Amino acid sequence: MANKAVHLPVLNLGATLRKDKWWVGPATTFVILTGFIVYATFRAFENDYYQVGPYLSPFYSPLIPTSGWGIPLLSPAMLILPGPAGFRLTCYYYRKAYYRAFAMDPPACAVGERNRHRYNGETKLFIFQNLHRFALYVALLFLVILWHDVYKALWFRVPGSDETTFGIGVGTLVLALNTTLLSGYTFSCHSLRHLVGGSVDSYSTAAFGQLRHTLWRGVSRLNQNHMLFAWTSLFAVAGADVYVRLVAMGVIQDVRIL
Ligand code: FES
Image (cartoon, rainbow, N blue to C red; front, top):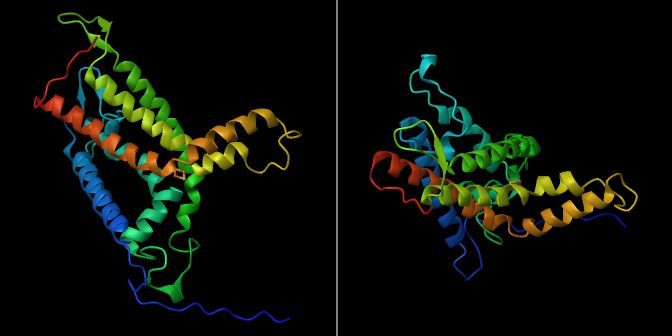
C-alpha cells in the first residue's frame, strides 16, 4: 500500500485551543535567562570584586590574570565563561527552554509556531548543538577546579601572618552549595548518560559491563531531575558570585561559623 503524505494543520504563531496559561513557562524562562545573561555580561566586564579572603567567584575560576596582556576590557572571566556558557547553550534541556522562550519555535506544545515550512532541525545554523559531548568534557574539568576552590575556601589566613588555618564561613557553604548543584547538573547530563551506558548491547558481556551499568543507573536517576538541577545551579552560580562580590565590596560581612 502506498504511503500517504500526512499534512498537519498549520497554525499561526500563538494560535491554540489550549485554555491553560501555557505562556507562563516560556515567559518566565525568557525573564530569568535574559537577567542571567545581562548580569554575567556585566560581571565579565566589571573585572573587580571577584576574590575576597579564601573565596573566589565561580565566574572568575580558574583565575587567569589578564592585566599584563595589554588588551583593553579583557577580564579573566571572559577567558573562562565560554566553557560553562557553551555547556548550557548546547544542553538538551536548555535547548527546549530557549527555543520556546526566545525563538518561539514552538512556544509550547500544541501552540502555533514560526517558520514551520523552513524547519531545519539542528542541521544548519544550530549544528553546533551536536558539540554538547565536548562541552561536557570541559564542564567536567571545571567541576574539578570548582571543588578545589571549595577546598581553598576552608583555609583562612591568620591575621598578621602568612599561615592559614582551617575554618568554615558562610562563603564556604555558599561555594560548596553552588558546586554541589553544578555537580548535580553535570552528572545528570543526557550526554554523560550515553557516555557511560550507551552503545552497549549487553552489560553482562561488555567490557566493564557491571561498572558501566552501575554508573548508567546512577546518572539515569540524577537525569530525572536534570531540569531542576539546570535551574537551581543557574541561581546558585549567580548567587555565589553575588555573595563574593558583596563581601569584596564591603557591603556585607562574611560570618565565620567555625
Ligand atoms: Fe543538559 Fe547535558 S543535557 S547538560
